[in-house]
Image (tube, rainbow, N blue to C red; front, side, top):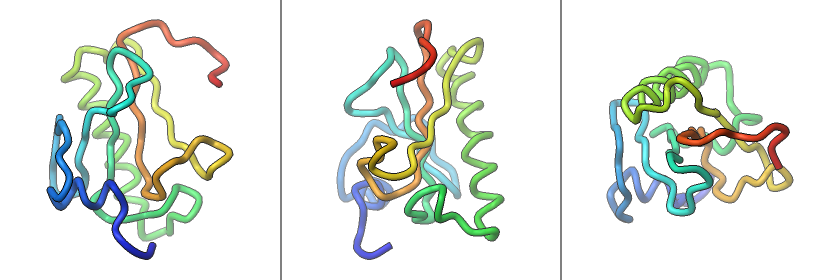
Length: 114
């Protein structure tokens, strides 16, 4: 990935965000355009453009993102029903080329999405 993404700037505290959780591997922020009452993004500190470009070496980070999503869902009291979404590419709705996991909940979520 060339240049800093919006999320890299948030991780480096160059851009403010409402941080819900942070550890050595990721940061969780509240989405600025929420699509549900609870909508947070789990972002790896290691810049990976998208899940389709992740390498075998990223396996531990990818697993950590999902475990963190579940931990934050519990903290935000949506553990009984939440959705995890990872967009890959423009046609999937990806707007920032830095892998991130959407965690949505707080209301009944329809299927199929979009």
